[in-house]
Length: 277
Image (cartoon, rainbow, N blue to C red; front, top):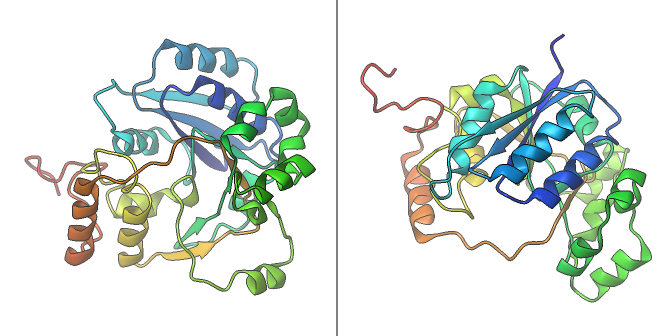
């Protein structure tokens, strides 16, 4: 039976983080989904974890892998789009833990022609290191504990307000008056809208910029509307050192903005290939 949505999880070698993600997925209030692990060249440990998890969970899990030839996240995301068996895709990174209502919040707010984007709580290195599977399985990680609040007060963990899940739409609108913006680690969109812009631009070959600002910009050019899910679709970001966008990425993005062409040349299809439409 066809599932309601595909969750795409982009990973590279962080086995512990991926194990925590699967523990968080056990808490999802809906089960009508598939998981696609978009793997940018991880080693055997990730493969072995996925093979073990596959027989333990009630939803389909597919491992889409490419060889490690440097950062090619957008390429493996495109392969994940092709592998998906549903019409609606949710994207997270392999260092992000979804709240138990995360997938339901994305699906229940699905709107034709819209790209939905949530926010994230940034956990410090100390809070990330202390996390245990038991806290994920019990849902304790979803709460604003005294320890987390203290960590935030010491300016270690950040964006703690984004741990609040507010059901009231008027209250959410009152609290969030700024223009919606995308985070590549927390967004969802119709598959056909991704196909219309030729998916993710594979000319971004380093981290920090490319899979989020670029795809949002090109989809808006194509007529999609960006809608915020702040104070819904809560996500907890596990610590890693800050990523700095490369100069090559910045220059390429500036050229995309200047050209204002929604369809990228190198994405789901290589439009430089002979016979490409």
